[in-house]
Image 1 (cartoon, rainbow, N blue to C red):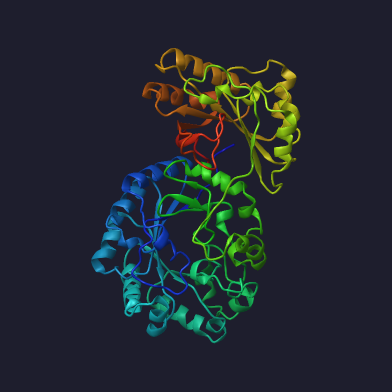
Image 2: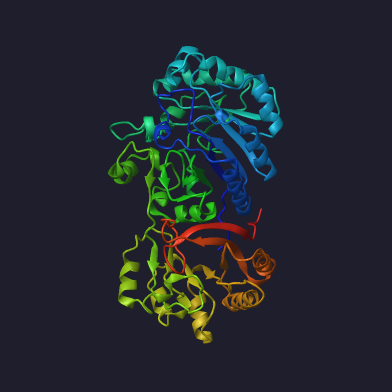
Amino acid sequence: MALPLIKVVQLTLTNRCQLNCGHCGVAELRNVMPGELTLEQIDDIFRDLRLAGCLVVDLFGGEPTLRKDLFEVIRRGKASGFIMSLETNGWLLDGAFVRGLEASGLDQIYLSLDDYRPEEHDRRRGRAGSFERAVRALELGAATSMAVHVSIVPQTADFFTGGDMNRFMAFVLEKGAGKVRLLLPRFSGRSARPDGTPFAARRERDLFACIDPEYVPHIYVHTPGTPVGETNKCTAKNIFCHVMSNGWIAPCPYLPLVFGDATRESVVEVFERMQSHPLVRLGGDTCPMRNPDYIEEHIRPMGPGRPFYPIASENQVDLGAPCPPDCSGCNAAGRPPRRPVEAVIRDLEAVDPNYRSIEFYGGDALLRADLIGILGRVPRGTGITLWTTGCWLPEDPAFRERLRSFPIRAIRVMMPLDEAGMPGGLRDALGRIRAVQGLGIPIHLFLPADAPAEAHRGLAENAARLGVERIYLFHRDPAAPLPNAVACFGRALGRARLAWAVRPPA
């Protein structure tokens, strides 16, 4: 189970903004989510993304230029090896500010501009003078080494059919824009239409046909590389995710389904959780928030107009396996020795078949004698994750062969260390990992965060040759558990961060 291919992460620095755009998809977050990530929290997220092999970090808002530490955020992102981009309305981008962006290492600016006519842009943005400042920012940015793309959110079909889109293209290209990103309104925030139908849904090709061929090479739809004439591709279905201003993680700012918290768990974990969930997978590879059928079936029942929707993972099944006696500090050791197989199968069959994976928790999976029979009831092609302490593995070669025949994405090894953590605990831990390695299945190692640093270091130094793909450091917290995360002992993880990983191929 190699690390997922997270290429682009969009990070909201603030929900504050100087403007009041009539189409804003995230405006309501200003009232319900005033908090902002600290530099230290951003550092932790950058470290996590670096381990995951992330390529691009896009700074988002609100208006991210309102962060006083913006230049420092950019510098730290560049130091982590990311391509850094910035979404902005341009209000603050005078000469000094643009030079500061370039000096900090910013690679690209996405500048929002809604019209080539000052009065129309200012009306849409809710503040006089916003057009003048945006055009100034465009011209200043175009004179630097940074790439500058203009983002536009058209609101009417007439903007295309009446020729305004072509006049807009001529204007911004003359002012120095490298490309134009065409963002069609989605069913989110102030762009959510009462009838539930996003503007021009299923009529995109007709509108795009009005664009003069000379401008087609300079424009893309939503995602770089998606030419006009095609439906907009949804990168949140495979390579993209969005981090809100408080650390909550969603597939996209306009698909605000919250699956986890980047301040308490790894973005990798949450990304995999999202990618497995039916609400993200349904609807093919296009934007679900421009799909009227998806909106009516899945979003309206949750209550349209809400700024976010907490989503519960329902593909985690309590295996009810026995627990070994030596997990110090774990209060799950007193659980019943074995959950009835009928109850496990019943829960397994209740999982939505559109999930791409099943995670079994609840004790040590390899201590359950009927494990093979249970795994045989998992729908064909669905990935499987198991938990074990590695304290005992069946010696029967037939069992091991059958286990390897299932699509097990990872075996997660919960590693208790003795109170001292060294040296006996480390020797025992390495022995357990070697035993699990013999199964030939990728290993994710979970270590107590409060174990001695020498134990962490010793396991990390031996991880690669022992078949470990990832090492997580965790804290238990039954009083405030992560709502969508489980461990062998159940829903009692309070925090888990990625500490080491085999890097994905370039």
